[in-house]
Image (tube, rainbow, N blue to C red; front, side, top):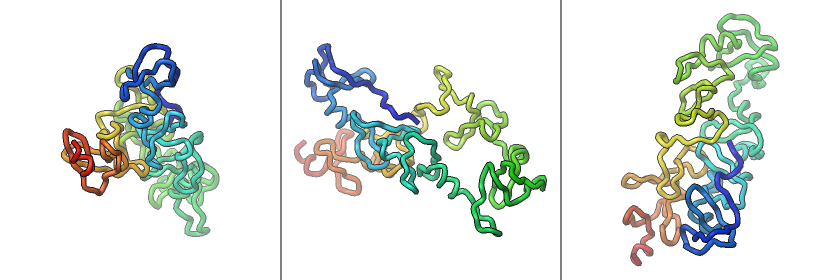
Length: 270
């Protein structure tokens, strides 16, 4: 994930107008994103990414966290269990939740039927011998699979995943999973420039639907994961609002006109 925006903020010295309100930008602070320039107020209103936790726009002066086409305010990116901030720490994404390493391990760990304590994964002490080769694992690393436990060698032999690109086995620590498909980390690259994408921001436009409101990918993360669909287009729950007055229209009456959504009152004024 990244914690910085992909736009530039500066003071305009040339004669450009805001793309949205058409106010002159010369000698004013502005945002340059892609091929357009806009004032700070219009950026926050029309272009800011929506935080997946609080469903509010991420203003131009806020620190932003990005992961798999989802966006959070820096303080909103925290463990779903202990609420500890994860903006600058490793984390695990599981079942549409962001978890710290501690709680992700606790959720996955079965309890020993003898001492009732969670098993420790990939290190320290094993309570069992390998279900395949029957050797005692002792202090060696091991993996669980349902009610069975395997040493590293047997786990890789029995359950190795195969890269969708080269069809070769992926060792336990050398792979990337995207859309439930395994890849070698070195093979997970940009189709255009071949740059490695492991740990980098990337876009897969052919996979995710785009929100008709803010044009961002609709994913399964955060409170904005609910979707509103009508006659083809889809919206994040928090993006489904009146084009004119901005009132949220999810689960409310609305008017769909010229590919835009309006509340009944604003529709009467069209």
